[in-house]
Structure formats: structure tokens, C-alpha cells
Image 1 (tube, rainbow, N blue to C red):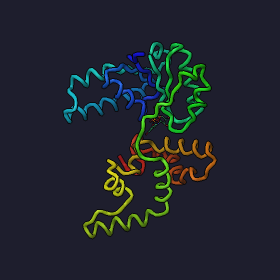
Image 2: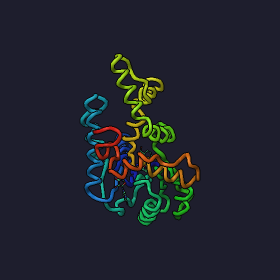
Image 3: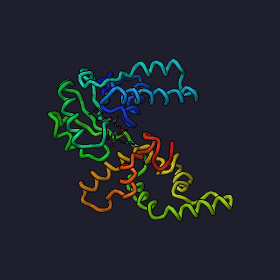
Image 4: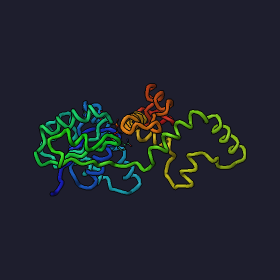
Length: 249
Ligand SMILES: NC(=O)c1ccc[n+]([C@@H]2O[C@H](COP(=O)([O-])OP(=O)(O)OC[C@H]3O[C@@H](n4cnc5c(N)ncnc54)[C@H](O)[C@@H]3O)[C@@H](O)[C@H]2O)c1
């Protein structure tokens, strides 16, 4: 089976990234979100990201234009008719995903594969809710830091931020690199950014939704979301997408 056109549901952090990856690889993408503002934000993010690649001479302006031309945006599910595969990358909420999958199934071809990018919801459960469980797959585009490390870190941050501040100040006074979790992961594990910056990149609302699913699904208290994470989400500090999370953007 040749995949020529991919339908992407959700134009957020993951959806627009998936659209970009498809378009750069020469595959057409139809990217859907709930309103025009959301799809245009997704398109603008792809454009900005490709601009950076052009600036770094990783692609030419012509290649960027060709990739952008491969992405169509829409707010209408009917526009997914005829795609070869649907990748669902909407908000991490089971009820919402089940509703979206039913709507998508009503317009796409009988043989079309549906993939979900969910971080935590059971693929079996999602697949079973469709009329095509045999053509339903999990397709998790991965951000490579274990979720548990982040959760424990956020819990720890709440109780030890004062100590961290003292360590940072002391190291600065001595002209040394402070031994923080961020520096340990960057210098020791060669991660490009620290774990809290990664959490901001993932989206703190997405992190919280994932932890809730794990907590309820596994019935294990180690997955309980950190109170600080809940407070930040309640305050609208969702990370990069709102301009403020653990860091300010
Ligand atoms: N952020 C990450 O690092 C990451 C990594 C792997 C997987 N995921 C998973 O990918 C999915 C998307 O996460 P995200 O970080 O892109 O979230 P996000 O909040 O950045 O984007 C979600 C998008 O879905 C849209 N949406 C909501 N309801 C919709 C509907 N009915 N139809 C179409 N679009 C709708 C929202 O408007 C929003 O633009 C989630 O399942 C998440 O768990 C996220």
C-alpha cells in the first residue's frame, strides 16, 4: 500500500510536527483542527520551523515552499475523505478521541488505517470502539525522556526548589556549573534540553492528562500527578504553547 496523503487530526504540538514531517518527506497532509485559528497556528508553526531549517541551510527556500504546498488545513472532517491513513493527534482525552474516531470513520474509506498518537490511552480500547479494530494502530511520535522521571522531578521540585536556588547561587559564586537535574541530564546523558524544558515542550496539560490516565488505569499511587503540575495547569501555565510553564517563552 502506498501512502500518498495523510489525514492529521489536531494541529497542535504533535499534529503540526507530524504534518511537517510528512510534507518534508514528499507526502501530502490534510491537517484538521476545531477552528480556523487553531489550524492557522499549526501552519504558522510549521512555516517558522521550516524557516529555521532554511536559515541553517538544511533546506532551500524552494523546498520549503514545496513542503508548505503539500499541507492543506481544514476544520471539516469531510475533507479527510480519500486520505490513505488518518493520524489522530488531538487533545489527550479519551471521550474526545472516541468521538473524533467515530466522526473520522464516517468519512474515510473502509480500508483506511487509523493511527492514534495517544500517550496513555489504551490502543485496544480505542480500536475496539471503531468498526475496524484490525486496521487500527498506535503510532506514538516520541519525546525521549521517561515520563516517570519528569513526574518525580516535578514533585521533587515543589519541595526542594529553595535548596536548588541555593545550590545554583553557590555554584555561580564559585564560577562552577551547578549540579542540577537539568545539568545532569544535559552533561551526563547528552540530552539537548533539561527535563522541565522538555515538559514545557510536551505541554503541561498533556503531561497531566497522561498522568491521570496512568494513575486511574494502573491503580498505582506512584503515577499520582504532582500538586504543582495540577496548579500550573489550572493557572494556564501550559508550557511553550501558552508562553509560560516552568520557563517563560
Ligand atoms: N506533546 C508531546 O510531546 C506528545 C508526545 C507524544 C504524544 N503526544 C500525544 O499527542 C496528542 C496531541 O498532543 P499535543 O501535545 O499535540 O496537544 P496540543 O494541546 O498541543 O494539541 C491538541 C490539538 O487538538 C485539537 N483538537 C481538540 N479537539 C479536536 C477535535 N475535535 N478535532 C480536531 N482537533 C481537535 C486542539 O484544538 C489542539 O490544537 C495527545 O494524544 C498526546 O498525548 C504528545
